Image 1 (tube, one colour):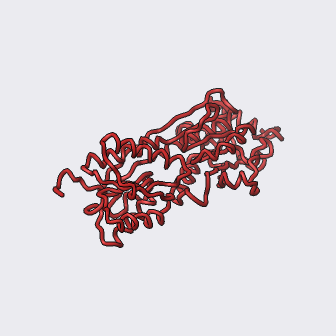
Image 2 (cartoon, helix red, strand yellow):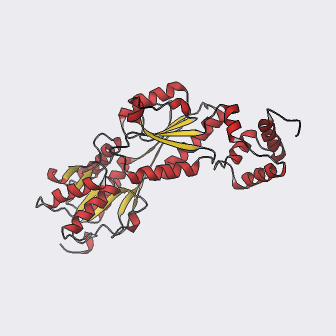
Image 3 (cartoon, one colour):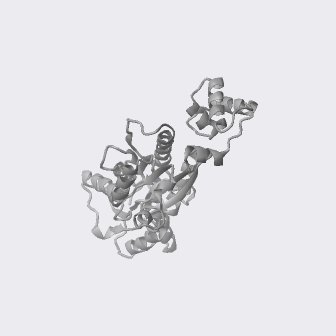
Length: 346
């Protein structure tokens, strides 16, 4: 090993691969802490590396491989529509899934398209957390650069990019159907940001369930929010002051549900005795609210896991021929914020 000079890292990785009877790509992933490598294999490779005295030099490696070890995550818009809780969840999950040698850079599609000092060429790979068709121009630009790319959260209208999305329409439907099974017929709806596809789809699911059961919803009880707690609070106050009090309010995310429930408490209404609530996303705090919030669990961790795994494959092995496009179904998480009207007389 003393005779190895400029190619020391590459040769040593291949030496480890030969000793462990695995590919050099597996060795690279294991030494970077990739979750794609089985723990037993990762431990075996780490032990061999320790025994032969291999010490990776990330600075040297970046020069040799022409990598920045930086992943760009682009949200549609960081100023409006993207809640702080969703942003935090995505970042934590993505960071936990990536090999340890990588760092994250967070920005918005809006900033990138406005030319605000965002150079995508600085990244080894890019994740777009897309909420709106307005992202399509940016996604097309990224695809043409040839950079490893995955698009998450929204179904895109093309078949040449890896895409993992959430079944928002189904989520809106199952939330509403659950409330109907609990005997509710008088609904209010607090919608998310109008420009975001998630809100459009959740509203569509709500409408499908309502129409299937021939339930009429007062137009004054359908409010346009922006996914933030303040909008939930303000709009709930409008609903309560209308004189037309619903038995159940469906909020298109948990943050708005928090604001709406707070408005009820401030104005003397009890949840769920007077008004029931259903949220969407199942954020980490939802089960700790009083009462714990019934909500639709958005499979964020699942799509992030799929997306990061695919991105790592693209960065390590180049652009494979097979493109994955999957929609992951959400599920209703039943807690205590919805009163069962079937068991009481009103």
